[in-house]
Length: 145
Image 1 (cartoon, rainbow, N blue to C red):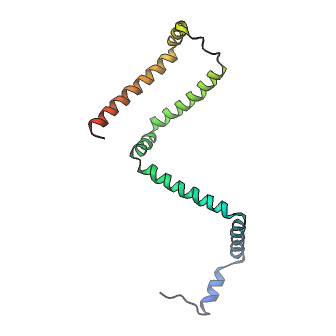
Image 2 (image 1 turned 90 degrees about the vertical axis):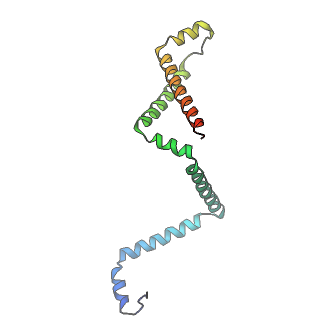
Image 3 (image 1 turned 30 degrees about the vertical axis):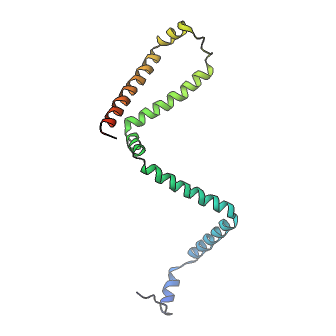
């Protein structure tokens, strides 16, 4: 493979460049020069360190079989809706807690709380998640995982 360097090939190469292309190259060169001047050695070292740490973290995350499985499960539409509902619930609960008076305590307060349908639904949800988690953990240990 050879590269033509004859004077006959030069006019064709020059003809393909126009003044806009040349101006863009000049601007790109100016940008690179300005970026190089703006970055100190310390900034470059920190950026390189952050990039290195990021690659290391990405490597560790992709080797984590459990995390990869969780991310695949989180991609399912029903799990995305669950996460959205959970984040909305956290936001609303945080506001409710901030504006509610402190709990009085005692058995009467606990019975009142337990009689609330929302509390019962929350306990039901936690119970279902706990039961499924226990079943899954037992199955994993049975398989030797």
